[in-house]
Length: 313
Image (cartoon, rainbow, N blue to C red; front, side, top):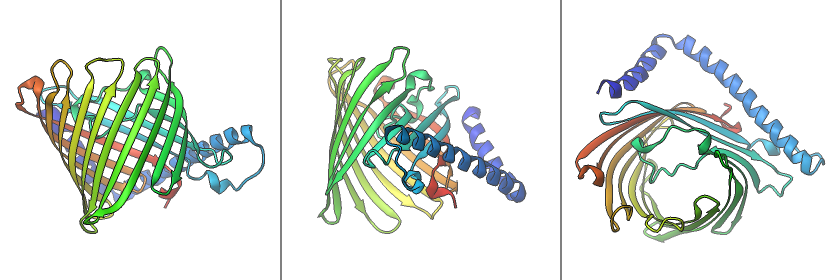
């Protein structure tokens, strides 16, 4: 229990310190923000150099401003377990000379918040990153995305990922409906398929209700099908504070026939210290098949920094 409370006490200590030492904190944030802008300008320079390698014609430098990065550091703990740490990295370099639809992307393996649970995150290492060229196209209500790249494992794992989704707005009582399909082919995992649908309803200016369902299948494993269903309520408290309340169920056929393996209750609280700096607190109560559906808890803390033009002010 001490290990769970320690990060929370540290976070509260930072808030108290900030209240008593506002000028020091502001100076620290100003200095950090200046360095953040320098890093963003460096990312823009990389985008420009890569784009000029393809085509050396001159264009407005503002077209590169949507290049961005995200670094997130995390601490998390399962009940009676030790505190563990990991990180999430994502860089998107805009290449406007390639028809303004291409991005060079470097990121830690895609984290699906609908099925990656608080205590299941593994500490990232070199096996968790991929580098790829991404192409996106929008046409009316359709969104198509293709990505080709390499997973940076001990053995390089080339992959091709194709995604297509369509959204229907206001289909019934102001509910939006999204249907999507993703196919991914790689050397190690072979063919992976993810089919999903999502319902979204805005209740008012502060609340929105959502339901997400997903079916995942992998060709390499004869027993590796998963069904995820989650219902969540988003709440905007104000411009800096947000809450998400989630109830989810995980079904799979690993080691058994297709059956419920996990039920989860989760609250995700996000506070923006600045537009570019946020902290998350994510407590979770879950009931798993492996533990005879006895209640267990887990908690996660995130600290994230954005490197993007829109958060300069």
